[in-house]
Length: 340
Image 1 (cartoon, rainbow, N blue to C red):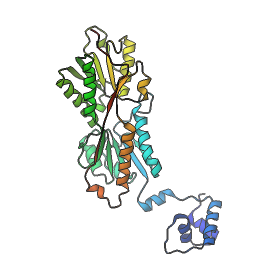
Image 2: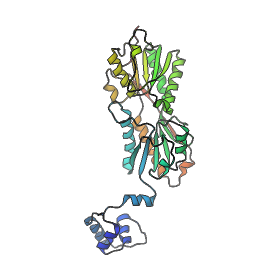
Image 3: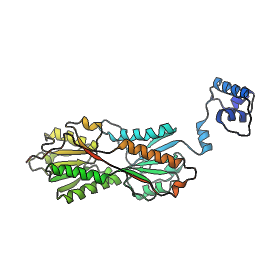
């Protein structure tokens, strides 16, 4: 049976207040001699006493737990390089500060405010939000600090946002493909991320720059796990290049192209987004936009911790801090001039 403070006190022949003073530093009005202190520590070790963290958290009104909320959690796989990078950044901020992480794949899909306001979390990192009204209201009024990751600045009033500069990224992608001679380009995105603020931002930026460069373009909703490239087998291809929302989707397109006998980059150029080590393992190696995922996640989490530990709760009135991160294009083997 787990030893309690009272068990230690009884075995040491002292009061429970004295044990609390020595082991937890509480009770400023309690005086304990050095000899008694050493005895209390000795007895605590012999009884294998461990503090009740839940009780301490209840007294402190803190859980030391941060909720990482996903609109849709895709799982940790070799073909999904984004999630390990992002989670590494979160853990790099949380663990040294003594916090743990709770992954919440469906916490706000029903717009249930009590689920995130019932005291289970000290703060929320909201990743790739979908900005349904129910979700926004749930976070805005949940009563604990919230920071958004992968949401353009100003996406939700009063909520800090950390995001890649998707506008600049898409400009660099379109200019790269235009410089190679591509005149028909598609932006391909899975229906799920298409609903997120970042998905909308990335798509809109692509369309705007393609239109400015007088390039024919389309936006295609396609399941990232099963891309259909049947239209690209013929000589009359609808596009000579595809810009995918993510490296995961681009990787699936490369596999489908290989299976269909479509030469990449000769008959079809492919561009991804994230530019992780995954891009060095694809065939051919994937041209991709680099965004500093780990740094963004670490910075967002560190900022969230400053809000959590703000005893005066000034974060409620201080306004939303936003951070926008530069992206660059890593050119590899999957892009080249289109064949006639």
